[in-house]
Amino acid sequence: MTESARQRERANALLLVALRTPESLPGLPPTDWDLLLRVARRTRLLGRLEAQLAVLGALDAVPERAANHLRSARNLVQHRHTLLTWELNRVLWALEGLDVPIVALKGVAYVLADLPAASGRFFADLDLLVPHADIEAVESRLLERGWIKLPISPYDDRYYRVWMHEIPPLRHRERENEIDIHHRILPRTSRFDFDPAPLFERTRPVAGSRARVLGAHDMVLHALVHLLLEGDPQEGLRLRDLVDVADLLRHFGHEPGFWDGLVPRAEQLGLGRPLYYGLRFARRLLALEVPDSVLLAASRWAPPWLVGVLMDRLLPLAILPGHPDHPTRRAALARWLLYARAHWVRMPPWLLVRHLVYKGWLRVRGVPKRVVLGPEELKRM
Image 1 (cartoon, rainbow, N blue to C red):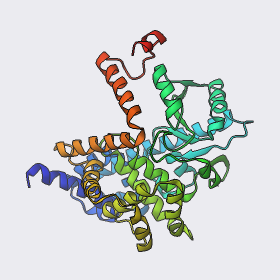
Image 2: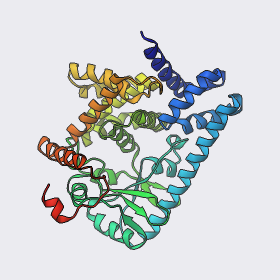
Image 3: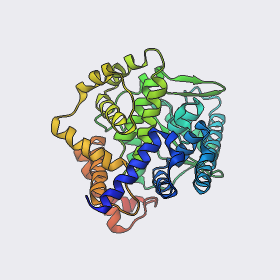
Image 4: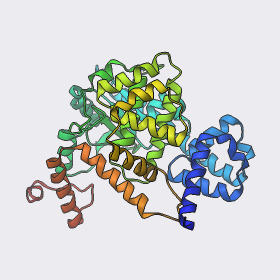
């Protein structure tokens, strides 16, 4: 094994040990703390480490410089929580009088429901789910009350509205917080797409808010969708999604009937394969304990042998950050292959080819992503 490979393994092992057994962190030497802070920041898990140590009452037992970085991450996380929960409050104010169910997703949902997954969880924007039939009314009301559309081309606007699971992002003109309004959790072109009506049927209320959150099973499955089916190639960020999955499963696993209902719900929504992968890698990387009966039931969605071997190799390479000073082409290739896989299942081949040709044409032209193209220019594509 080369020195670079040893350094990458050391960096990954440090981060996984920190996530699995945070009680061991006070014993780390300063050199290990330096590396751990770097890889945790790279994966947006620095706030998570601070939250774990705070629960243990061990923050004062780590080196002072490391503790200062952790406290800084905590302050940033708390600031984002305040900003985006207030943004949700303003959205609910703007939508007063509209008889529309509003479901918070991902980070804000974890905060609203006071889930362990919210501890130290950084999130950049506000994600909401509303029925497709109400999208036009919701968007219109928000545009009247201070939110604006981001500048995108007519092609991208149509792409969002015809093929995707959300409308183009909106941003408040003063606070500059972005909100994503979803009408389903997967693109309509995805091979895993399903009717979102069952999601609304199992949403849970939140004390003191008109907003609701997804049911326990659906929240886990949505986190798995984000982990495995989103086309985000950024290195290391998917590890945070796997941490979300493990946190949710540990928390909801104590609810009566949760484990018994998880596999049937995944089957109902057509998300058996993501569930299989999520349970497999949460056990392997984060030492999640899963009942044997659930693992056996989920194994019916295991991929063909060769695909399984490839995923066992590719996914850890892609989601673990490695050493910042020793990047590897294998990890970059793994991230690209998973990025390509996400797009392959995201849309049918004919649409994927058309979309990639258009995006390639824009890149050749040197057109920025958020520049509005006029109708005449669009016709020449």
